[in-house]
Length: 222
Length: 247
Image (cartoon, rainbow over all chains, first blue to last red; front, side, top):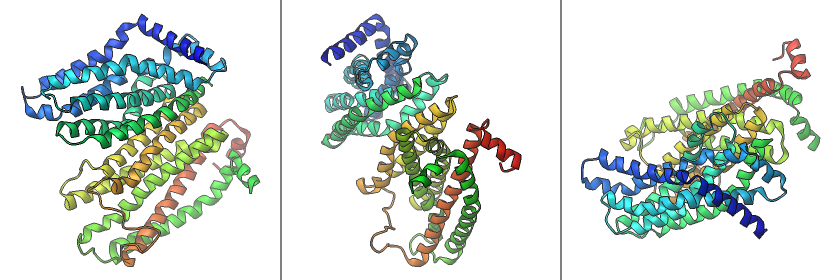
């Protein structure tokens, strides 16, 4: 089992190394959209710092959507997905590892970029740590939900249009609690409640969604 | 008992069964909604606080209840479709989604119309309103996903998976007024214990709710019949009924 995990992780890592631009694109998108908010608002508007948690969370969420429709498509086109399915190994495990690597390459950089972007919007110091923590807990859930929907829409002609419409309603609670935690910390209150909720959502998503995504993949290849 | 269930899952048998049930459901729904309308809009006394404006509950509350119940029916059918691969359950998933979306939209619109005079705003960012809106998006997602598939069976099963994941939201809608301090009022009617609403107001509301439920049953059966006809257009039983003029 550990050899299987190692092989899958190695394969994903190698694939990511060969298309490094794909990992940079969400970051670029995030930096540009947040900057656009800064440019669209009145210069040095204090209201911008106040809405910074919402702006950064929504932009991160949209940035995480970018690579999703390619998540399983290439594996399906070159046949490796089919090989995984007939290999007799648990497909849910392979899906979970794939999503984990996807998060490491797209979600983690987004989390790291959040604090500099928050400063850019005029949000100084206090509470930025909570923003990063809320993103660290929340973005894996976004990747898991997005991976599930990507598996559902795999092979559909209009998957690129359909995918955001299906993912966004499902991630609404994550956005509410994630940006809620950051907002509480910004105003000096205790953000523990929403953070616990995010952690609970992460555990739930990690337990259920890889299995459901595997079921969706089997359905798509039937 | 079990043979009855097995027969129910067979498309031709179900088609005829639904055809026999439809007129009764339609009649019951017409009578109940008629009673609810007259009783609620004309006979019930005005509310001591909200005056005549409270009468919108006779549409709003049943629609909101149904929006959740339809989702539960859809999710239950989704589980059955995925576990036992019953064709009819797949059809229920795709047939229930547009009906549920209509009830949800109706609940949202009536709630907004009531909110303007009572709260002073059509929309507030409140837990129950927001989660009800998300429910509408979930229904629309199921409809959109179904439309995108060419193969009806694979599409229905994908919808079933999506519907199951969305169940989380139903729980949030149901308990949002109890978990959070919401502007939306708490429940006044509970099955256990004495409801905090006068009986003259309650009876038309219950009539209206049963009327909406039978209306849902009617619409669901009709849509199921259509779905079955479309899916099995080339099979023998459809041809037989076509020859009889029974479609």
